[in-house]
Image (cartoon, rainbow, N blue to C red; front, side, top):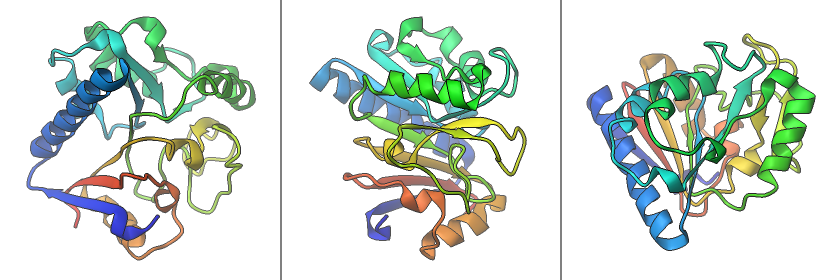
Length: 225
């Protein structure tokens, strides 16, 4: 990723970052639906987007035309509290009228190999996304792509067997598939992320630096510089 294509935006508070993220998501949803009839959105994993989801549940939107995907998932039971999909449903999706058939959960309970295989089939029916939302881990990982690992970028979805943090078994979109989006938005909060941000700005070969976007990448930051 050419660092000149990254738009770094610093916020003075977590609420201001969250509100800006919601505004961007809704704006892109409206323009995408107006232009093409659908809005294709990929959700970040982990706790990073929880506040954004909580705000989205109170927004009036054309939910019927949203298509929602997940950047990664942990290989746990479908209702496990640590699944990314569980967080998204509890904070947001259970409270709005997105049709269930439009929410494409990764079937990670089947294990890395089978779950990734089936999600590859799902994504093969989808063109470019309209927006991919990502977080950034303290160790500089994104989705379930970790520094020092290698990936088959010919696949849309990857089986992960050796994540350096639990659970070890996961499923993740590949860097190439995450890059197939009209917009990419990173949400990064907390001083514990500063080292990862420093590595990114220094041009280190971390997963975030492999994700690209023709329209540039937005990074919304709070409590990091």
